[in-house]
Image: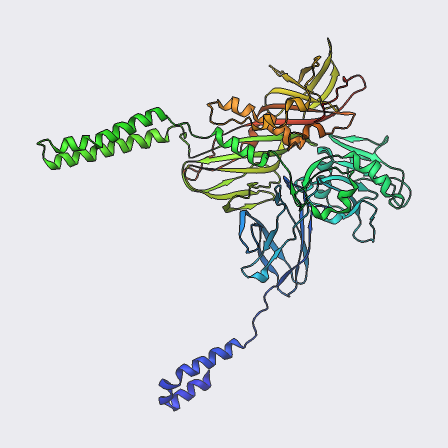
Length: 638
């Protein structure tokens, strides 16, 4: 730069002619100077679920390893989108994950996208360019994962019908375990406290654990302290534990299909590329020999569509249509022939125009008031339906549907009081303007036009005192009595008992008084089975519709729909395939939505919490005592 200044002083004529050229040379010189290297990321690993497959209608675990190949740390956001086409168009809502990776390091991220009845590709993006994105492979679908936990530091695995899973990929919360059906373990995994708690919650919620001998020839210590006792427990909450006096080297395909796979049976009607439907069962060897052919699910009804649609109808505005029709007719008559008749009078034309303006203004005001009647006085309201299961430590596992209705457009956020949150719109029909932040303090932020709805699905945990349930023989007559020790989080009014034979007994609950309450299930000569309760999809299509129902009556209808979602019933023939262990019964209690599950939806205008109503269905798996004898009932064949 000093050289350039001296040149310009000695040769002033150069100042005008060569100054642009000199400036270009200076810029080119500066451009050649070394700049700080930018951080570059690459996807090192990407695995769906626990066995490289996804489960429909569930939040699936997606484990992604991201490597920083530069000497600069990377700080930004990881955006996860469900792709609609190969052109890069996406639908639903973005999942947003904070992203920080140090130089030359690899970080493991656990994501929880919601998979619908059809498999799909997902895009991971951390920058604007194509080089800063990654598209996952299309995952095949399955009824659920059945895996053997492997130590990542050792070459340990089995190919005789049971897939190995790296234990360091296990998610740190129970939301990511929804697709795990069976876990086989022969050593104590090296886990921090969060992963131990997630495994404990998974087992208590209904997981199936098989324990093998370690290399020392003894059963290993387990990450759940309550299981390291004598005699060895065979159940933990709704979960079951099986102990096998053999090592992993002694496993063979016959033993796996005979002793392990049948302990967690769930049939899912998968569809192959040719359109043929297969009722896939875990004991089906053909499924595990050729899993790549299944990418969609056959269904006659879809709870992902049914439940939010029915919730929407409960907050749908009820207009005074007769009054609106009368006022519309009167308004038309006032304009014509009323306006024509007024113009033929001897009134001053200015008064005629003033009268016309008054009529238009009056009716506009009436229509704005009457047309908005039924929408409510608040700018936002929610109605919810929740399926609730117990967890250890005075906690409850919740799967909740919420439908948000707003009268004022703006940005709205939904959040709940929970240690860990995940959200999804569970639809593939539209692109939603907003973002989802899953995890602690998670929230769903979205833009909503006025007078619109938005349905949201969220798994979460609820803090509330636990309740102890016990089955007793009926004091008089035939049947079973259910004893409740302790209050439930909310009042219940209906109860159902499902036996291993598929028998479904219902009971009306009245005036239960804590801390001890009894619910009686009476057995009749003409028993009702699942196939009678849900005959070939008829109950599924008996929707709320446009008929006028009260909020209480409308919410009570969600008991059936939540029950069939819990049982995995998708078609009219599925009630015949529901499986319960022979020593277990399932109890459903339907009632009000607990106050803790009323989602906080701040009003876009007043910033006040929106009112919430809803229905809850509690689900319990209980051991069948020896003192209770159930009648043998066989379901009719489809």
